[in-house]
Image 1 (tube, each protein chain N blue to C red):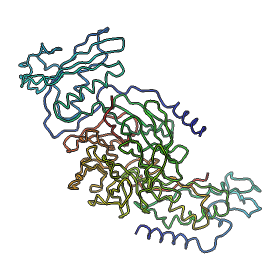
Image 2: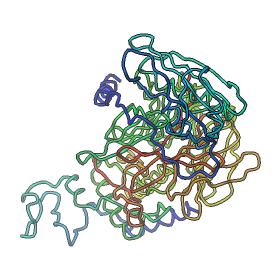
Image 3: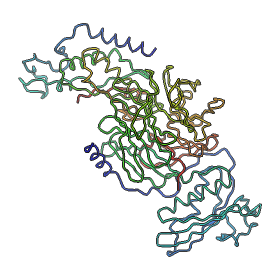
Image 4: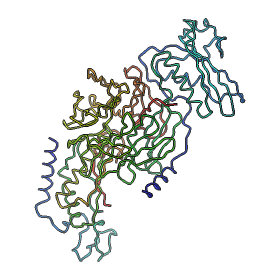
Length: 435
Length: 173
C-alpha cells in the first residue's frame, strides 16, 4: 500500500502543473441548419489600475453565444453606439441593426486581484431591460464567472440552461521520444484552461464525473493490469478502488455519488456488470451471462443500469434494475449498438450505432424507441450529454487523430473543436458547476 | 453460436497438436536446433552469434524463438489453423517449464466502442489461454490483460491496420 502510494506520488509529480490552454473559444461551427438570432454584445467598460482590462469580457460572451449555434453576435464595427451604462442605451440605434438583444456591462477592479463584473440585457424592440446581474470574481475566476454570465444571458433568451461554465474531461494520447504518453485532461467546455490531472505511459481510459463534479473515476493500465481509480480534482489525490484479477473497467457513478457501476472480468475473462459501494467497498454482481456485459451507466432516477451486452450475438443495449433483476433488451435496430449514456433529463439514450458500416452517434427516444443517427463520421465514439441534455459531445477522427465534436440533440447544430496536440478521445461532459 | 465455433477451433488446435505431448520441442527446420536436456545447442555455422556451445537452453531463450503474436479475423476470437502450431509450441514450453510465466495481451481494432473492444481483446486472450491450458499450460502460469484498441500495433483506419491490430501478444514475464 505504501509502495503504491509512492508510485502514485511519483506519477503525479511528473504530471504537469496547470497549463493555460489557448484562451478564447476554439470552436468551429460546421454549418448550422437553424437561423441564428442577431445579437449585440457591446465592449464592456473598464475601471481599474491598468490601461487594459485583464479579460475582454464581451468577447468571451460573444464567443459563448456564437458557439451555441443559436446566436449571431454582430461585430463591434457595426455598432452605432457603445454604451456601458443603461442610461446611455438608445434603442433605435439597435433596432436599426436588427439585433434582438443587447448586452452591455462593466468590469470594475475592487482590489489587487478582485473584480466585479456587471451586465444588463435589453430587448431593443420591446424597449425593456430583460435582466441585470453582477458577480464578484477573483482574477483567476474571471473567465469562469464570465461564462456564468453568458449562461444567464443564454437562459434568459432561450429558456434553456446554459453550459458555458461547465467543463469537459477527456483522454489524449501522443508519441513523445518513441513512447506513448496518455493524459487525463480537464478543460473548460470551450477547450480553454486545459488542466492535466494525470499523465502516464500506460493507457488511461473511460473517465467519468462524479455527480458533484469534484471527482473523476477512470481506468488506468499502469503495472500492465487494469485498475479503477477515483481522483479528486482539487487535491489530485487518487484512490485505487478496484484492482481485481482480470478486467476492471467502464466505471460510472450512481446519481447519489456513493457507488460506481463497473465491469469485472475475473481470471476467466467473463465480463459482467457489478456495482461497487465506494465507502464499504462491497460489490454486487448484476449480470452473470457468459457474453460480454460492459459499459454500465445509471439512469438519472437511479432505478436502472443500462449496459452493452453481446448475449444476442452482436452488441446491443440492455437495462437491468439497479438492485438486480432480469435484463431487458432496449435496442433492436441494426447489428451494433453500444456505449449507452442517458440524457440528464432521462428522456433519451445516446449510443454508438453501426450506420451502414460507419460507427456513428445515435440517440434513442426512450418513450417511442426511435433511433436517430446524429453524426456523420466513420469512427465516432464516446457520446456524452451536456448537463442541460441539449448537446452531445463525442470523439471523431480527422486527419488520423481523434478530435471532439458536439451536436445538438435535435441534430441541427454541429461543431468541431480545434484540438491541441495528440489524439483526443473519450470526452465526458461535467455536471453543472456548484458554486 | 460463437461458443460452438470456439469449441471447434479448440478441437482443431488439439487435433493439430496430436494426442501425445512431446517433452522436448520438435526440431524446427528453420531455427537453431535444440540439443538434448544435457547437451547444448548445435551450432553448425548457420547460427549468427546465438548461445555458446555447452550452454543450457533456458525456457526464456526458447520463448524468444517462438512467434509471439497471434492474429484474428474481424469480430472473431477463433485461433486460425496457421497459428495452431505456434500455440502448441508455447503450450509445450509452459508444460515443460513450470516456472515459466506468460502474459497474454489481447487487442482489438479501433472500430466501435472502446470498452466493448476491451471485451473483444479479452475474449481473444482467453481463447489463447484455453488453448494453452488444453495442451498442458497451468492456470498459475498464464495471466491475461486486454488493451482493447488502446495499444494498436499499426496506426491508421485501413483494413490492413485493423488486421494487424486484432491480435494476442504472448509475452513471457
